[in-house]
Image (cartoon, rainbow, N blue to C red; front, side):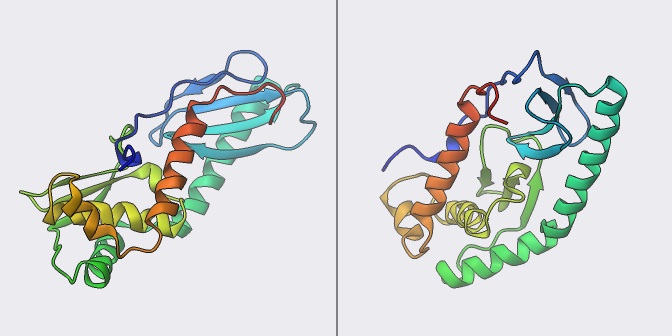
Length: 198
């Protein structure tokens, strides 16, 4: 079995398209501002790993930059609020996945999001019956979230990554696709930023 993307290391720091990136560390993770001389008016933002990337025109003043970072952070938060499951919904999702793929045998005591997992997508403590998923999964495709959740549920039944563990995941039809997606995310986070590519 190839290396497990759930055990991958987190992203390194990246460089900006022009000059050094400005970074800050608000409660929802660091912000990196990338200025681009190719951008004339548009400002955009996205989440990457545990941080937020804000793309702005190179000619913007520092005051405009601060204002736009604030606007874009609020916009992203509003979008995420609409589509993210809360802990109760996550626990209900785990129950459905266990019933569908594990004959209901995996019954966690707690399932919750955490913000302190930068090098793993999820973790499970079988003795405590607890599952924790990295907040970095929020906003990823549903089949990826389900795979990680199912992976951690399987650990309630089989602690290691032996053949018995992988047999439990055989019934999930998107295992390979989800693993490929997560491997792609990790690989993209490790790539150096290409100047002018924003």
